[in-house]
Length: 287
Image (cartoon, rainbow, N blue to C red; front, side, top):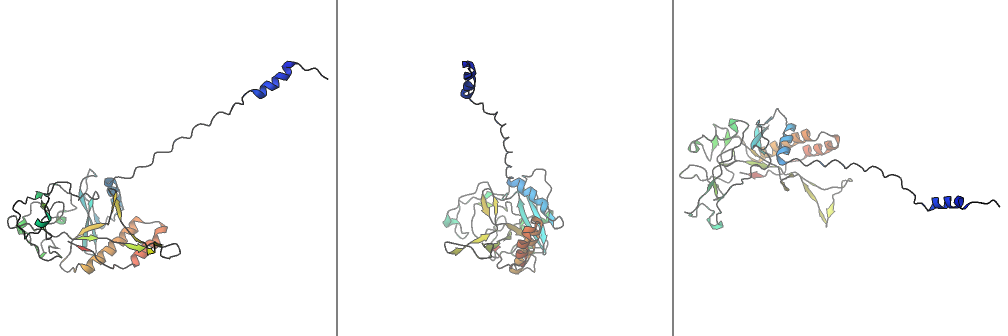
């Protein structure tokens, strides 16, 4: 046998007993970029305006995107208006709390005091889009067609009363706790068109999807200020309008045009075609 020194035996044993050094750790993965914050209602309203057709859209020029303004669309002999930023028309001020039994104008209410809601200032697309503050309310032809301004000041609810002192029209629904036209463009009726687009929820095969034994109805809505709402627009009517057919016609033209502008990719073409072929079943009327 070959003599082996203790040192020669101990050396490999010590090597096996030494802790194995782990490889150096990999550099840490850089953190992902912060998610983009959703645009505020003001930014979203401003950015969406660039998609409008400049030939049929009139937008007031403002330096501050939070400035309240009205954007005008032209379609089918009608003008449509929407507020920007979205929901700017919500009145944040004070109003008198009217008891339910004192709401009708026929009921005497001597303590009634209405707050003036005309402090806010809007930027309009043009002088013909609203009643100028300098206009005399007594000079406006209420409950009839206004040939000077080319709009109908008639209400679909019938004739409305006028205040004996100011000459301003009274709300047909009764006391509201406010007076003045506020953020509305016109004295008297301000007709609005509400866009309601629905469809049945379907599987890729085309079959209607049911939940708890009932079909699921989908509706197009806007999500602003953490709540859903239906898109709506103010509009004016000419002397020849019948309200029902004209509303269905100009809304169909307007919605189809907006879909073409906002949805240009191929995946949306079938949806756009389906909307264009759809029928306007009902015109939602409001004044």
